[in-house]
Image (spheres, rainbow, N blue to C red):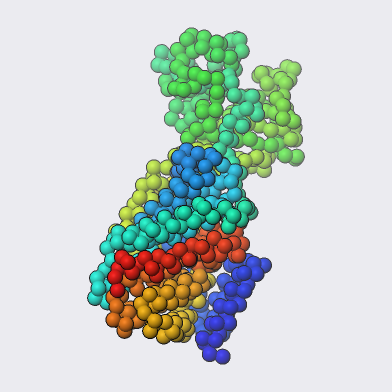
Length: 611
């Protein structure tokens, strides 16, 4: 068999396995790369070269940056803004704002970067509004494809066709000249998705959708009976508590009052200093009148916005959070005495409440403190402390954490610690990508490295943040593009198409080039497809005596029409897992979109760029 015949068989086999959807897509991709080597089409170095490709490394770095935005609460903040702007019931406004935002961001940082940044935002929105993620994630990606035509930086293909125009002697495309075709593409895409997306998209969620923690603090506060009577008061300079030891404060003589904790003014953690200083906080539980009397007598100031009976904001905020833990069988804590306000052995966490069977435990006779109880298997405790302390000390076999503090913080604490650093890193990366000062992969690696150096994420967390399925899949499928180019298979297909339609006029040429580009673009990267089609399109235009300008722009539009398969682009793959999509789900919505792209490419482009 010839190399071209081998490639045809390998491509056909890979497509069948992808559509069959019984084998992991990563395994199919690796098998494809190995088949190219086993058949002798590529050397082993060529077959594995995709894993070191700059585009693959860039995609991996984008996962780290996206996770940094999520960890610091930037995505939760963006999600809240989208929900606030769209409303909880309006599917139209939600899709309109989401697609508009991803399109504008794509124009600046390319499809991969925009989708990677907004993917966790949309997942949070789906969870919070109780919508199917499959109804939101594919529109996100397809709108990004249309948005890639709004500016030169929207896609590498834009740069390729602009350079090709310069080389052909007809001049480069301007930075925003792509918007002349990008605006109708985006408008049509949004209209099709809004009008027909609901019946054409499946109704399902990804296998690993996160729980909705947006109301986590309120739920815990209500469950443990802390929704009223919790007050946080600042120690004034004139207070007699200044200079006193925290252990010396006794409120037992005051009716209906209980000292929960003394918190450090700087960190919000339990006080570690020997004495109380001005600015430290007393966390007190009791009725409003008793607390007001204590504040007046002891020169304490209510913290802003905490005069109300709700303790949610004081216990759960940017600095500190709540965690519910269960005492498992054979725990070393069984038999230990605990009480509300007790500080754990680490000195970083406070026991706010203890329950047994979902009910508050009555005080034990003879207990040294009000509410003292002996822990049994199955008891639950509500702990409060800084987010760092919760992350650090709850990885203990003696307790089972009900909800991971890290996951809770990502969703429920918008613009948390490190948020502004994460935003600054994103802006710096956008600037580097938009100006082209450094290659995209360098911009991505610098941003990912800055995320780690800023303390937003550890190296281990960055490893876990990378979507390795997407990275391996893209890297394993890239050698297919190399094989098609080196063996001449792709060029042969394109030349035969040009020969077939070349004498029917320039419109027929655009139609033929669109079909070829769109078909190849569902199997290999649109950048590789453009590299194959561009020189053939320019040669055909020269032969026919027409301007290459509309041919190049038409090719650019066709390359963006990667809607029919999940392997068409890395972003299509990014949403496959979170959206719970099967291989066959893509073409249902993708088909009407690709028809719209065909109309724009073949009939609207020549109206703007004349032959």
